[in-house]
Image (cartoon, rainbow, N blue to C red):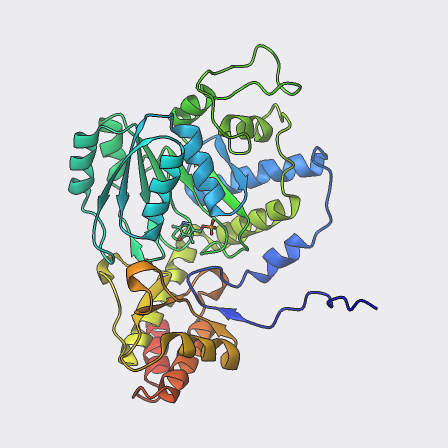
Length: 408
Ligand SMILES: *Cc1c(COP(=O)(O)O)cnc(C)c1O
């Protein structure tokens, strides 16, 4: 007889890493709602509602606001392959792992990619970005907002005006930052922005919210191809069409727009999840959610510092929702993380590239940007640090964090 595995039954975890994080319970409930057909009036209405909810999340009036089916990387790829023609110059300021990802994707899209770099733990002054724009003359600036690999939050508020002045399209990857830090798509002059659910939005990975300005829609439209059997002969038939079917934003726009031209089958349960993430965010209020992330992040920072731990990076530009904590000398980083997980059910993050083995990344995002989650994590961290021989003040971390919550 074959022994089949039992039904899925995950352990209880408190996900306090850089993402994915524990989803809002209502998001998980939304995902278990029954399926409907792709053109059921309920489904098309839910798609339209979701678009309007995300206009609120992005702070935009952009008609072209929708979801890409796939993780955040799918949104990034859709934006870049649809906006960039082979040979176009793309400028990518790199301040962490995800800047390298934008450059890599732009290269695959056959762009002429130019990067500028700053040290991990720093952000770019806008003047440096403008100088590079003047020198490179790109068609597109692709810039990460919050890079979880370094915890830095690149200021974007003045970059859109610079791009507009130089006729450059402005795209940002806001996956790590959206919903936990200020974001203003229209006021900051964004032409394209993408995200994911598994950070501050409090959902699972697998759906990528995206918004496009009218200027970006024009570029995308000029590159959309006729798909035989679906589109009419009078549709645009570009010669420099987008070299991806799944990520052709023009086709995806026609699926979400009034024509509802068939493209992929919208991932129904992920649509329910994304809709619920935006709904809970807007009901709490955009400013209130960001403030909750600010307070939880400040409490976690105060807590780890009170335990005597050093924190990596320029704290003036740290994202609200994640902190990079230096692993104390003599403490085995991976073993300590394993003890957090196995003995306390708490996940904290490791790190990439130059920070690998040097820092843990601890997140306070979405549903887990909460006092009890912060205090529980600090109490467990204190116990684990002591077990591995670090001398830490008893109760120091939780006391300092609780003070931050009490005084805000
Ligand atoms: C976490 C993160 C991603 C994740 O991409 P996935 O495809 O969802 O794994 C992308 N960009 C940034 C800036 C991130 O922080």
